Image (tube, rainbow, N blue to C red):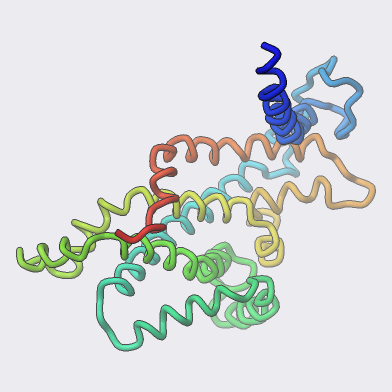
Amino acid sequence: MITWLRTNAWRHALVISVCLFSLFPLYLVVISSFNSTGSLRLDSFIPREISFANYKMLFNDPAIPYLTWMKNSLVVAGATAILSVTIGSASAFAFSRLAFKGRKTGIQMLLLVQMFPAILAISAVYVIMERVYTFAPSIGLGTQAGLLLIYLGGAMGVNIWLLKGFVDSIPKELDEAAKIDGASAVQTYWLIFMPLAAPVLAVVSLLSFIGTFNEFILARLFLVDMESRTVAVGLQQFIGGQYSENWGPFAAGSIIASVPIVIIFLSLQKYIVNGLTAGSVKG
């Protein structure tokens, strides 16, 4: 017992301390969501009173279209995840398996573009979308379709590189066997690549969904109308004012907004481990 305390006790104490330190912000948000005062201040570690006023405010106050914000976030994030995986997987397969002019230059340009922070392009993208609004208002500045186009453009490079690494790890003998059987490149893509790539496609779609669902800067810049805002932008109004900070509804909205992400994460959990390591080693 003494030997165990000397060798392992400090390890367990360190792990428990790190876990408590990591979980405390989540605990604070949960407790604040049940605090009717709208403050982050804790009078005691265990609250004496639990109130659902913040949750009722989100769903009953006509000035707070919370359900509309949630719908907008789910639509934009879901569309971004589906389209980015669809376009990225087809592009990765083409760069990895097909021979065409400019293939090497194209993949090098994708890598070069990813070297620059995306924040550098915000001003240019804003001006472009403002000009687009003049002749195509449905996909211009202030529209969810325009924001979707921006998200897709920013995610393509990373997704293509990640998926290309996985395609490179698939033996080319499978492609050759499919060609012998008379399969075209499209049939090889759908019948061989897509079933084998299910784990990495699930991870890419999950990362795209979470990243888009939680994104704030671009959504705040491009979505001006209250009804078109995403949940991240909409909740910011509770804490954006200098003298009107109300952390209670903000915490409650954050807790509810995390439910779809948790459900999707648990649904794709069996693919995550395999998908994150897919393409890391070529074999």
